[in-house]
Amino acid sequence: MNVAVRGSGIAGGCCAHLLAMHGFAAALIPAERPPVPALLLSDPALALLRGVFGRPALFADKPRIDRRIVAWGGGEAISLPHGAVAVSEAELTAALYPPPSIAPRDGADFTIHTAAPFPAPTMRRFGQRSAMAAEVHLLQDEDHSACWVEAVETGWLFLIPSGDGSAWLLGIGSAIDTLIDQSRHIAPRIALTGRLSSAFETCPRLLTTLQGPDWLACGTAAIAFDPICGDGTAQSIREAIIASAVIAAIRDDGDAPALRTHYESMLIASMRRHLQISAQFYATGGTSDWWREQHDALVEGYDWCTARLAVLPEPRYQLRDFQLVAREVTV
Image (tube, rainbow, N blue to C red; front, top):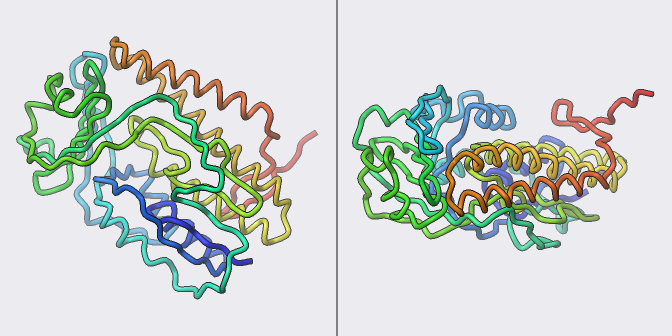
């Protein structure tokens, strides 16, 4: 069984590596996608990456972020313990690529798509949240090891240190200069360097169809989380683990339709959990129309996912050491 992985980034790199571990001649097919300004790898996401690639010291040399400072709902800033590292996309790509050098045979019987276009391209969005990123200079030394999150009237700001006194400021909602003008906490702690990213989308979204007879959809292009929960990177890794395990089980004479349905169910269930958690943040972030509209869209999305899951069968498999095994049925 020949398998191809279309795309790059975390999902593509993890899929190619895991498929090689399963003994596949996995061909990686590059695809264009918008660049990511910076990634904050939480300790759980970092542990997943290290486990997948068998590299316990991966990014151990990166400066640590040990605090998450949150100013939400108009309140004062609260400092919370937080473990993470910030990496650039170039650093992450260098760590994950090239995938294991197994020479692919001609043709692919199965494809994992981690970039558009997808075989079934219809996307469901839960809200409308445009974002921009600005490169900034940190004015206070204490912020070099802390990320900041601040809710303002028409959106929120996320400050991610990137080393050497620099940081990326992510602005979700209004234009980033408008959000900075509304900021009480982050604005006095930064100086803009003038470099801005293009606008990009940050609302939760997923393809309405995530699998077909000879393909699976995987990664943030197929199912994306709101950065408010900081779980998007770990989610992409988990999807790659499940996707590669599904393909291995199909190769080993598993029930292909049931395995593909299991994959889709797991991703929809993950989105439902994410929407439920995110809705709590948007319910308390602010009182403007923007906050209410985003909250209502998340609630609607939760109900949509619940309705989808209601017509899908109960999960028949579970992961065990990167392998899918049938669940034990109790009577």
